[in-house]
Every structure is written in C-alpha cells, then in structure tokens.
View 1 (cartoon, one colour):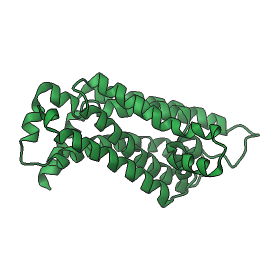
View 2 (view 1 turned 180 degrees about the vertical axis):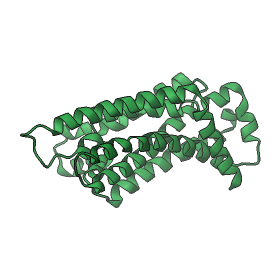
View 3 (view 1 turned 90 degrees about the vertical axis):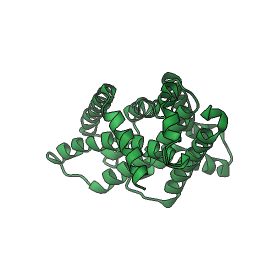
View 4 (view 1 turned 60 degrees about the vertical axis):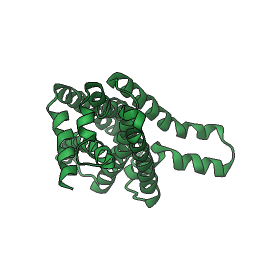
Length: 247
C-alpha cells in the first residue's frame, strides 16, 4: 500500500512541477470565473424564472463543458504515453508493484489534480455568499457530481494515453472519446419509444449531472459513473499488461 501511495504522490508531483500545470490551471480558473460572472449577471435579471439556480447553470453550461474538454486531456495525456516514449515505463513495470497499482496510481494522481482545480472554484460561491444568501446543498451535490464525472473522464483519458506513446495523439483521442460520451443524450430527439428514451437518459452524462446540480443524490448515476470508470480502468490494465505493449 505504501508503494501505491508513493506512485500516486509521484504522479501529483510530476503534474505540479510542470509549468504547463499552472498555465492550464490559470486558464481553467479564468474560464470558470468568466462563466460565474456572466451567470451572476444573467440571474440578476428581474423577470427571470426564480426556479433557475446558479448550480444548475454553473454545473453543465457551455463554459463548463468547454473547460472540462480542455482540462481532462491535458491532465491525462502524459500518464502513460510520455513514460513509454522516454522508456521510463520499463523501470516502473519492473518495480515491485502490480500493473493494477500502476494504473490506479496514475488515475488517482490525475483525478486528485482535477479535484484540486475544481475545489478552487468554490471561492466563487464563497464570494457570492458574501452578497446574497443561497442554499449550499445543490452546490455541494453539484461538486460531488463534477467529481464523479471527472472520475469517468480521467479514466477515459488514462486509457487513451495507454494506447499511444504520443501525448498529442493521446489528448486528441481523449477529447474525441469525451465528445462521443457527451453526445449520447442528443440521440433522445431521434427516439420515439419511451423505453428507448429512458435508456438514453440513463446513459447521458449530462442528464445525471443535471440531477446533482439540483441537489438530488441518486444511487443510479453514482453506479453508472462508477461502472464506466471501472470499465475504462480495467481496459487500461489489460492494455498495460499485454506483452506487445510492454515491448
């Protein structure tokens, strides 16, 4: 277990010791700050429906998906591809650790970096609270949804990175896979069967995140996110453990 946490710490250190981490972090917070400012102005309109809340718009708006699609590939693109390109993966895989520990450590390191960056946006809500009252429950459940969604997307990015030794290709593959996942909910407009609509809604990442932003914590989306994350990590383990990949 100590080796696992050492590997996880190594991944976090590798990210935060890189100048690109601060560039990515600053750009991410700038986008989120701009979105928050625009939403505050929008919600200040006098004739706006009072049932619309800041968490509903902040967790799932255009800028949200823009920042996520930018952030996750940059967090995960180097996890395996860079180590394979430089040859340091040989030292890692011959160390007294299992393939599963390596995959989980790289996943957890990127996931923690994702969570740290998102936790910084909590300052926007704290600043807003100084000027107006609002319910904290939807905000906290919204962050829970963002964290769980991040687990899925980080796992997808780590899987993409394990498939190539080129960081740029890994980022593009992760970006494309996330676009496909986000587009599942769009298929609802083409389906007439009520049961088919239910299935598509269950498979839609957007639909589940909307529930969290409303303060609803349901076990179904949690199981869905956990299942997708586990499936991607399992596939990554199979890729890393394949003899041809090691060669």
